[in-house]
Length: 179
Image (tube, rainbow, N blue to C red; front, side, top):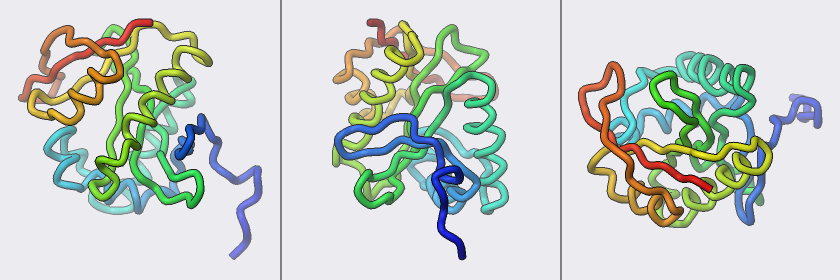
């Protein structure tokens, strides 16, 4: 097995005090398959139908990789800076049904309540406003996802409205953050 060179290493989007957010690669498929099949992910975000590592590679390539190529931003893997242990995903998403970019995030349960989600969201918002020049940023959250609602409100997001996303049957809350 050869060592990964700097050329092969995934591109780092940003770093915070404890975290590194870097582009997802097909090598992240085992972690993504696990994350997307967590009961909490399915409950609060939805079932993406990712059951195998091949499904996860497709999800990464059609989602995050394609978004970076098309928009210049996308979801990133969130990992501990010191160890490289993957914690979750966080980044920016462009959806046709929303007027502005939204921030999205999800973490595996053993890394909840450690401040990683808020630290990564803060980093993404700083990056979005600084490097990308974005102003208004949205977030969507299930009506009953109290932990995410608290996180968004702590970061200065305010409730704007509810809506039903195309292809979904549940309403979600839309939050907005403006500089």
